[in-house]
Length: 229
Image (cartoon, helix red, strand yellow):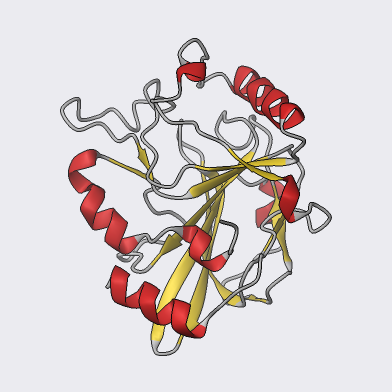
């Protein structure tokens, strides 16, 4: 389903760059970042500490003249080692990231990249989870797919109701602080999902290596709809 969906999507839908964060931030201010376990710069960084992580991101952006650091699709990370949510199976820990993260300051606006309808939302407040989360439903020809937005501010959930319509470019919410996004440095987790498998307000954003093929097929690279690469 992944390959056929992507092929048909590219044939018909050819987006120009859509800023997922504040519209005043230009494309040139989005800087790729490597947060994988292979990055030697991260060996001595406690990625589970939101303050240290935010400091690292800010310094990285200063050095690269950027406003937003982004990346992480199918990236294997050490970020999740400290959370029991991802380590319940020691033989197959969940450490492969299924979305793209956009790291910026708390309060930064999150913009809807596509026309859609509010499918569901929830404050996933367990340690290591998404915190405030919104899922939009989109239609492409006869197919339905979804986009997930995690680590938002609590205020982002207040004006919502199921079925609310969003147009591309609408304000969806804002990035949450560590106190409300379950102790992460401020960022948006953006994920493309073909089948929610009956879930509402939540969907796995990290998988184990043994489940990678399934999630690769169900969660295509979300830059497909952003034209950021």
